[in-house]
Image (cartoon, rainbow, N blue to C red; front, top):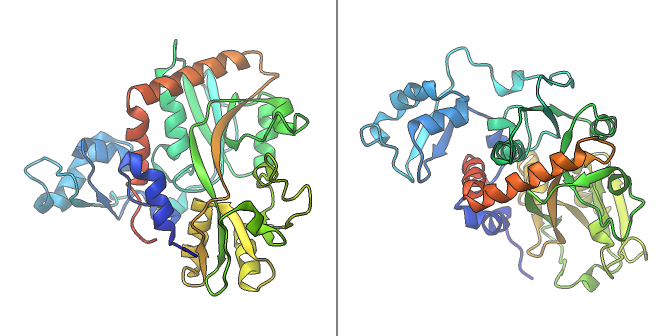
Length: 346
């Protein structure tokens, strides 16, 4: 049986973008971190990415003069990104009230998980950066603004009432097989922004072969409350529907991992980024490992209420922008920029 550390799947996932690897802890800090320069970087672009203001390039120059060729950033060199005097620590950021802003399209993100969505992340994270850039590239672009909340049920309710125009990130259920699903009934889904691997995390001291679906017959899997399960029943898999596995939930991802450590369930099934972050935060990397084979690859989408009077127009605008984003190579640049922020803690 082949078992690997999270970096193996991270490299496979991000290889097309030349990225390094991911951890939630490093991405949560905008300053006092090391940054490995990428092709095309300048002091201006790095300052804008970390500080949100190109004018702060001098702070980078001051502490990295020995690593620069004059004012030129050399790809591969590791630069220190200092905190600016008087800048608040990321932990000091608090959730803003979930109110519409003065923009024609108001977007509502959910979650606090690097590199995808977070108040303290550059451009509020990878997904908001992709979405807002796609809207900028769309036909007849209009003003837009991003807010971030932490309650998924509240987000869905606000989107259904059209208090906000678009929400993210969401996995699309199998709407053909389950048209009665609430998201399928109430929302349009954008084209996928990116795919994430749903992995199995198991105790390192136990054998757990997973070369084919049949290997999971009789096993118990845990996912956190609220996480989708459609991939576990997709096609002829029907792991939950036919009782092929024992499906267990816990209030948090950490709760699932604690059940694995206690021998109460055989595996945790969460996406690579959530699982890797839990292992890092709790020092469990030697006790729990991800298996080589993913359970599924799940696309992340933007959703728009079907009751929105301009819903189909917004959907067309966003999808056209996503297509142009990829055609012009901007997609790879954005993904690479976000993933390259993170260190090799895995």
